[in-house]
Length: 250
Image (cartoon, rainbow, N blue to C red; front, side, top):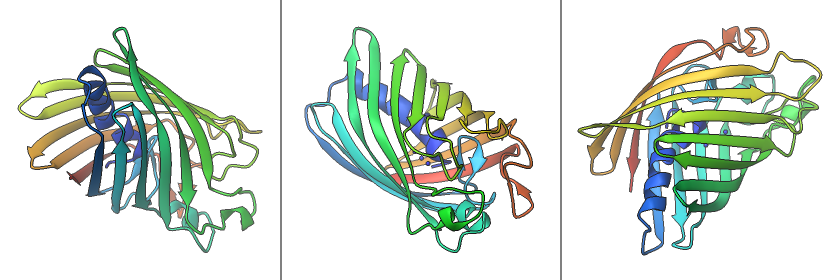
């Protein structure tokens, strides 16, 4: 779901900082970059995708000097098989968009496809195909980023949930010496016949740039999600907890 602690914490923490910096200091050349990493618990929008257990992750990004970008990112997951499917233990995110500035505002618009490779969750009663498509838009002013994501399909295996959306607000504070503090709050609205899937998530993430492409992150993550709706294998995947991640970018 966008990326080391989870696609939410990474896409809305380090990506917000780097995206604004790129917009303010126009890069003269296009770039191709790679990243690999691991996390003690892959959280996305506050919900564990890995059964509160570790996951390995990695991605590739191309940013054109015009502002257009494309990328792919992947992670091991457990929630699809935990839901009763026999296939689907890897998430592949494919995305593309455009970043630019208007006055003192940096913006980012794009499309994201969550592809759960080989999943057959749609064959399980009370579930739909897990593959999900979203469009998104974000604006950054100073240290604050607001983002809206809108689903074009059923969202993450929930039947009749097309046109669900996610609202996110985060900030990135440079503490010096390579430390960045990122508070975040988000609201996942699930558009189906029940309100049980809708919830608020929050996170407080501290990252440390270790140099030579290495970054370590720690986050306090939690939600007010319904404990039965988001329970799999007798585990509530939205419980409060601390996650730690290590990422190498090159």
